[in-house]
Length: 116
Image 1: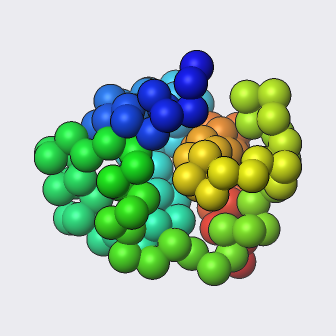
Image 2: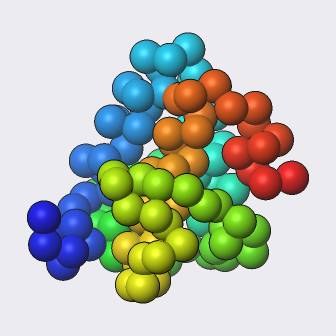
């Protein structure tokens, strides 16, 4: 898929898939929200507003209050690509988000997911 098409995807379109993935593995919507808020600096209310307004991923990250300084500690492979090797800053942020939800769904403890 063309990277520019990914940037224009609605966060509201991706979000339900994150919830379904987590819930299928026994995690909760609140836990998904917690990791997304940790990464982006959104409050739960502001996150809900982003979803209601159907912001695209580019806007979602551009409007993020404060990208977490420990996000750089998120490493590994997502969709067959090593996160550390992704050059485009926005694509790296999107993959960080994917990786956090994957770790949540795989049962990793929240303190490790949040890089505490």
